[in-house]
Length: 86
Length: 137
Image (tube, rainbow over all chains, first blue to last red; front, side, top):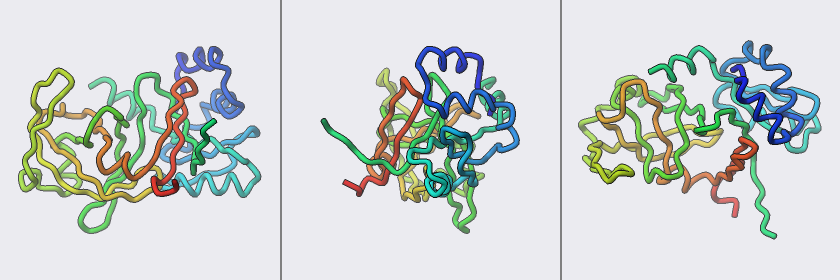
């Protein structure tokens, strides 16, 4: 999904961890991973797994040396838009 | 100081709700993926009747329940026990199906059957949710 401009403003306000900074900087690229869990560390994506596999994404990141990965589910922005419009 | 250990840390981007991807098992074991809102104020999970066909549930065969909304108005629903995959955990949980959930609205994940099987901690200021199985003490 693409983070909203509101999210960008909020990110400035609440001093995000490095993972959120990375997410905002790469939000356009995240669209190619719709339906995936991304496990993110300070240097970017450290684990990718399918829709039901949050633990696997976390485990991949930990195996890559990220102690506290932040996992993020990439949603389809069009689906989100249509749900909100209803 | 109280500290808890969690299995995973999840980012959610929305200011006003915590939307989670879940999957519901059909009778044949296949999965239906959908997005729901985590609602810590809801006693039970609730889906609209429209999802029932996709999941393969005959709504009217469930036990009839009447639950109350925040304004105390009644909502008539039927309860079914489903197998639900939430954040990597496979849970058996009662779910209410109601005609009164608007068509296209997201389902709700509530306390009974979900938040008594997985522990979550919410740091909304950081839009972050921490999760673990509830038997980890």
